[in-house]
Length: 345
Image 1 (cartoon, rainbow, N blue to C red):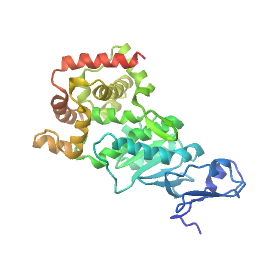
Image 2: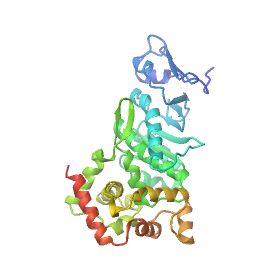
Image 3: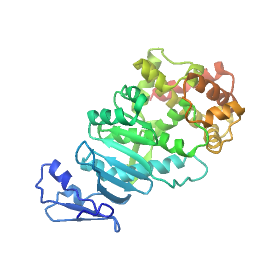
Image 4: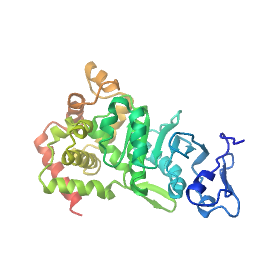
């Protein structure tokens, strides 16, 4: 009998890989060591289990799946590619530490986060129809990516590097959605999430490098070239869900790439000679210390209120003026110069 709490039988993966069904690998959770027969494929014997606490079969309607458990995450995956299985536990735990590095104190989540990772878009769309309810149609407008909803990240295979990238992005929404007292305005939430989209490995350590995010830099360059840059006042008031609903590809590209650039601008340009503006905004959002009136605090706290244009305008504009400044003409010029600088490389 399969003991799901302690063992994972990867025979289903072996079968999918076209190997004989008698080749079985198991993961012993107590020792975090791989035990495999000599004829088990190498990619099972070489699994990196440093960040994996346990594994078990995930029974679902789509076919063979696995549940991988790490210190802070439960990953339900239909994507059984050995490369993903080998790296995703350590990658997502590295992202968790990177989220914490944005804050002055380390947050230890008491309940594990949930990730659903599907093998293809049809599985993802079908699951989304049930899981996301009324918002399913908006999420289905995402051309190639993932979303965060009801406390879970939901993604599908869009290639090894990009799949990990979107998981790190959505993982930030998941992290601050649980731990921050105030919800972040859309530009700040999305801009920060994009800091984790580009990554590398050095001496076995995964690091995140915002300046190497070619996907966002290319989009920003196109927006600049076409003279489609959104004024900061408009950017601050924009909700990406509203843009997605209208299916305006250029507007979506502009919002995301400009939010990415705005957060980098605050982090890197030493703006206004005030240290750590960006980090103070995040910390005060975490602790509930934003300078908002009672109505603003209610809007920022209540996660049942949609983050529409009005929400972003009320909360986002107040925060921008308080932490960054109210001279939008001057800030726009400096921000635009920064955008040109980072896209000129």
